[in-house]
Image (cartoon, rainbow, N blue to C red):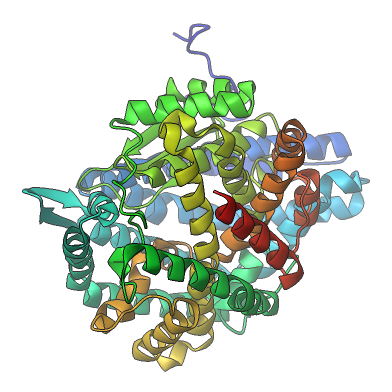
Length: 569
């Protein structure tokens, strides 16, 4: 019996309430009905779109629930099997039907007088998907998903025994903040050596992924997977050449700033060279910041920060805390990293992370909280396609929230808030070169598929010299050669990384706006979030009070402002 308390906020209108999308037999009649439904007027097409959105939301949520359950416990074979069953035996059957539905909408859009501003983004997206779709790619995309789960399984099982107990690699990272250099080096080497134990398996896995993705691209009529990825990710507003120019700008602007900060760190630590285990410790050798002890303390503190940014955001976050959509702590068997997924039917965000009590964990929850607010801001949009924004702007939501939270981080850091803020800005400066190396690596790999693993690794090492020459890697060349394997994006979401760099420039503009007028900056930020994906990328940036541009002209003054703030702290 459905009571008022248990009734869904967004009840099904087209799909039966009891329909279970864990089986294709349940889903197929709904796709068939939409494909065959007659449409003769704009109102009928709009109703058809709403029904299609509901169907896709139900279908998407089934897959998301199984995915999140698996990542929360990668060593549970039943969870893995449930997810694999969906991506192997349910999801692929929907792809031919989706192609039919896209073609049906485009055909009717050409005949019916749809409002241009409302539908231009949707039409552009669907036409692009039609052009890329190939039925022969369906099993290849399924295989790619299966390989991604293998990466999660391998890395989720990585632990070290240190300090008398078994610990995840995320937990080991805490020791890199310890003043005792011997402890830092031991912890770093243990974690790095543990990754090397699976280096060969990860090499083999990645080689399979690259070959598979290259074939997918060729099937779709693309020259290489880079071209395919740019189109599949709907990068309509910039090109690979723009990304390469961004890398060059970072080399000219950000790399010298990183070297300046590295020299200061080296001087304060009294070192002749910086080793990988010297990068997270406080340069004045103060004890590491330990801003919370439990997951509940982390959530409660972030709640207070969100309320200070804007009271409504705090209320939204507290609502999420009561709905079992936060999994914050690190544990054995849990997939690495952090993400925010969306349960599309309930229109609720789910936040996943591996908190171990560090300053970085606070930033991570603020970051994923920004994503969650984006999801919440769009939840009353009737079209599923517009309830998500392009990744470049989605990351402005998350990184922008990190910046807006800065005046309120005394909730965690007390009198050491300035120290934490300085570290935050230092990480932003250091992030740009790292982002460039991850992005440039993928540009090389997918345009040099036949060169093979050893050539890819050679190129990776040239990138670490280009973008991270301030770190002394002597004697650690083997670790350096494999260190790209630690970045899950390369395996799980290929080419998804430059968005962080583009978005960081947007977030820094939000930060600068907040220095001039905090209330107005928050209002503009929320205005941009509320648009979801209904407008083109440059308009989303503009709505949030930012400029969509990642040339040197935008990068240089922002890095200069950040460096000035570091100097003042």
